[in-house]
Image 1 (cartoon, rainbow, N blue to C red):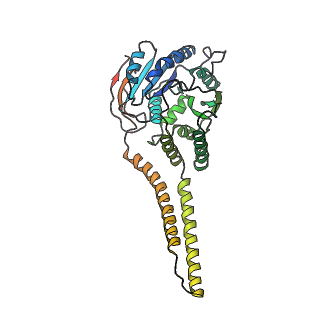
Image 2 (image 1 turned 90 degrees about the vertical axis):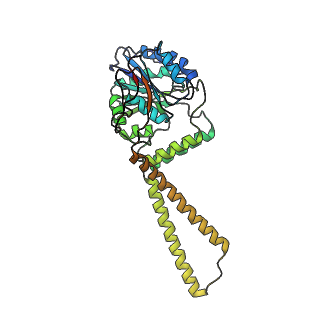
Length: 346
């Protein structure tokens, strides 16, 4: 387990407030452990703090337990969605409702150790960096298939997109307020948060952190959910797949033209022969498959355009507790807003 450094940041931390964002989905069994470790770390910073939790449409009683926890957990704020909208959206909603000079984003299952927060803030405090990520030092953990898929995704993403994302980092990090504001200014619906942070730029660094085993429950990220996120990430940050299929289409067309000329010359010289049915079917199926794959990639991009032009809200908030003022359904700069339920200071 990563522990806080011996030198505390409480005497020198230049933040007037530290915010922590915790996206949650079916985390009822781990809340007591989470707050028992997180709150002492934040209290040791010596500056005001807030804990913004986002209940992403949990099917259990996570929301009810969060409300009960407000009796013992200081500065706990709660947002609950009308349904499950996904972790990327939950993080976005949490960031939009923070007020700290620096914001820490971490998972709620304690795979991200709270004791590493002072190290992240100390690096941010140096003034040299605007975003500090926790860099995993245990990449070999996990199934070989999942690790292979992760490696393939990041290689494909680096090759096909206009930005680079470090595969050894995750969502666990500390972000300056100007980085958070830049992130919230990007209104797209198909969100890959790490890509958005990377696209925004700013000065970024990493620190090594040993991640922990999940304390309770099971991962919400199955293979197909990860695959959808990977496809959305690649198609949201580059058009190289479209360009590749333009090249493939050109190559196939030129090959077909060359073969057509060959058939004409062969017929003029040797006469016509009876074409083989199997070779004809193979050619038809091959080129049909090429066309369908190309249309599928184009359709993925058109799907992004379709979801963007509809301008639907990113999410709907069913209830928000502990905030000083009511918030709109959408984060700042994300389009038209509508009021949401709010309970001030309770």
